[in-house]
Length: 98
Image 1: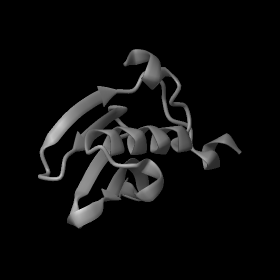
Image 2: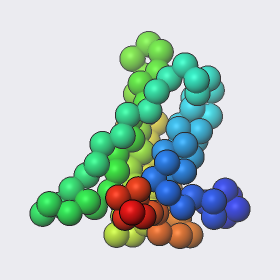
Image 3: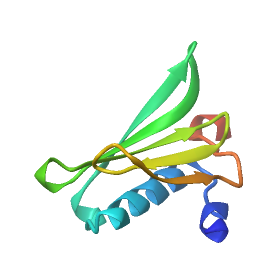
Image 4: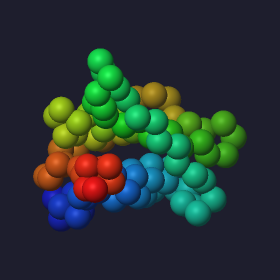
């Protein structure tokens, strides 16, 4: 699992990883379900990202990346957390790289 997390360096890497985990948890075909990403802010500063995947039959899966702790929290269709991971590297956003 640590090797999987080591490759996450950009926000796009993070999005792809979260999409893969959420689809795998419910055995969904990733190409058929898009992942919505919402930036979370606190006092005007980005503090994380919220991910939402809407599957068939009103299934909703989610994940939250907390930037301060650099952790990912995954939630199933009932809203219960099923996985928590600490990222090994800080996520770089495209606006920061420029």
